[in-house]
Amino acid sequence: MTYLSEHLGLVIGLGASVLHVLGILASIHAVMKARTSQGAIAWAVALVSFPYLTVPLYAIFGRSKFVGYVDARRVGDHEIRDVTIKLRDEHVEKIRAEFSESETSCQALENLARMPFTGHNEAQLLVDGKATFDAIFDGIDSAENYILVQFFIVKDDDLGKSLKEKLIGKAKEGIRIFFLYDEIGSHALSRSYISDLTEAGVVMKPFKTTQGRANRFQINFRNHRKIVIIDGHTAYVGGLNVGDEYMGKHPVLSPWRDTHVRLSGPAVIGVQVSFLEDWYWAARNVPELSWVPEMVLDRDQRVLVLPSGPADGQETCSLMFTHLINSARKRIWIVSPYFVPDESVLSALRLASLKGVDVRVMIPEKPDHRMVYLAGFACLQEIEGTGVKIYRYREGFLHQKVFVVDDDLAGVGTANLDNRSLRLNFEITLVFADRSFAKEVETMLEEDFKKCREVEPGELHKKPFWFQVAVRVARLLSPIL
Image (tube, rainbow, N blue to C red; front, side, top):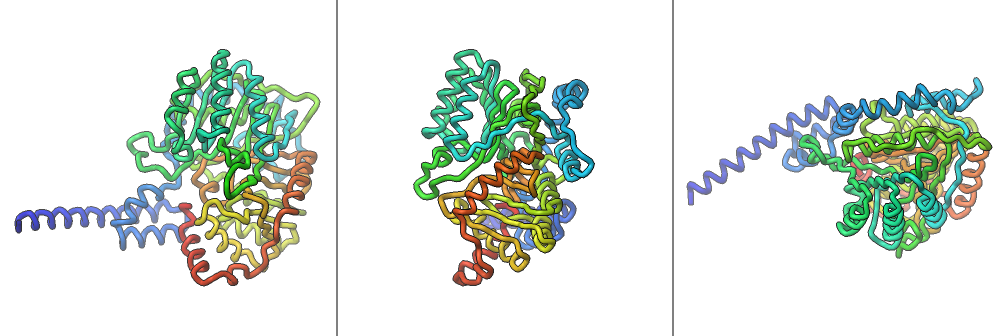
């Protein structure tokens, strides 16, 4: 008995020593790699002091770059590069949008996107679930060659079954279908749903961030993009996933407020490039697709496709929002279901308002993620007294990701104003340098503002003490929410 006790004590002591060594090594890694000094200090202190808990957490949440995706893209780059070189050499100059010398703010966005604004596009705002999925299903019905589908969340409910039936029907017609879903966002998706589509001929792949030996604990990254592409000439991009709640059927959060866009024109090719890179990570092949841009000759909306994610060399999404806020001269309205921005975005919002810009942020009254909701209160407190106006949407749950800048720039996409979208998620945003589209977004948001209440200063201080403590704890955890 004594021998067993001594042996067990030795094993425990050895394990504790290993964890402490790993904690020290991980703390050095955190100091070298963490994005901010605050984050480096927090991780380093926790890893050295409490390695038993924080070493596993650091393995999961400590990475800020999705290196495996970069490596996979590099391996497959010759095939993807052939596509992009052909686009550049044969089509870019014909589809590149024209800008006046005074429209300098768009150049930075082009550099972030690593592709130009294109002209001769046509976009249609799709407000809420019915309009969005009616349009998507019509697009699927019209497909003659192939369909690309990508969603963060796919559920085997009424809407999910309707999508499945549509795709199975088109697959039986001989239409090629490539379906990409996030393994974490769609963790509850049934095996029968996947097998039904696969047996019908749909090529279906999860976007697995954990594939590869070095990535087995890498569950902190998500592919948050929502894309449907028809034959390379029409794309649907926006905030809606596949689930009955997006159709306004959630028992608590309904009605669900969301926005998507139907896009036609050369910009669709940019959406397709984004899908192709994600597909290569998941499937390690490059499907044969159409890369000839189709111009909408009677329309000339200028559109930029701006993908962002943890494989980027720069923090693309954070830089996009910071640039948009800094470039605003008259107004910037931002709508996001989650408001936990980083310090650079918060500072840009404060400064813009102090310059006299009409800065408005619309967020939900009802939360769907309690911790993110609580962390947002701390951010709201940090911008009090600067003139930034915060509105809470009161009729159901607000999930759209939309912005409008001045009178001539607007955007619709998948990116939220939180750390996950700014740094950890793969996102996509359509930016429109077009007065008519910006006006449509303005009109849409004016109707939404009528359903909001403006947040009063000091709202957090009116909450119970326990609530204020929970807000501070949530704020500390915001980098991993």
